[in-house]
View: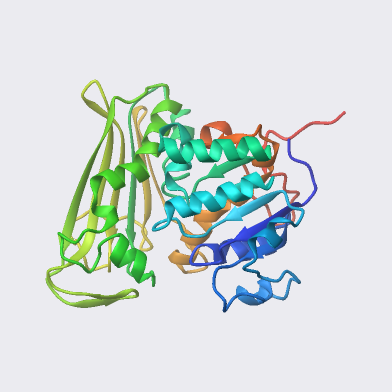
Length: 369
């Protein structure tokens, strides 16, 4: 069970996602930032607060990983990119685990559900957990809690469940990250461009584990997961935050993974991803102007829930916090867990801090007396 102490956190990777996590750790009533690992020379030696637009903390960013990991800490919050450097990120995470630090992260997407992830990485990290006597929890928003926690909780309101469908309906046009948006995802390129995410095998390696997680959580192991990708091709030139989308290049993408049992689709995950709000006008839109997620648990009764996340008028800032906060708020549960690889099926209810409240991080809370 959680207690009232502050958990000591080393943050690795204050980049596109990690910068929001850095702000969150500094402001969190139950966490204490004690170390910060950076990659770039420009950030080396800077105060953590200065790096993220907050008051000085006294914690100085360093590129010296060994020195940072020598600091007494409960956990490393690892947010360095794993999109292009999955195996390298896994080695970095294993390094933290061997140093006796629990790890929460978003970088190893298949590790959202270790039983369905690639054997090589699972073996590496399981051995590192045993050596360090610690645990690893990887999640996010999608893959992550939008795909697993929400539908699994909703299933508890049902007499029976026939199918579970989760949809992400978002416009990525405001994301200024060309390497990921264009080169990794394939936007702004002709449909035959060899973007990693447009490869069905790669797509399955990233998202199929969370489809298996939901099915296993509901007691219906899958026979297989089918994948499908459909591009939308732009007819006019237009600008987005990452650059230009030219005519004849991909301006939107739909992909679908379907978990199949006995020839029937039972757990479905879909993305309708636009690069600019004018793209793919005939595809589904979210009722929120910010876009968001839709979870449909079909059975008795059938539930449909639409939800959005935005941060004081900015959906991108809200998405950043949505991506990192489950991992950060899960730290007490991860620290308390038996050593090993964790998924949402292994954790209790995770709670966030209520302003003016007393955060413990997990439910149920321990009862004394």
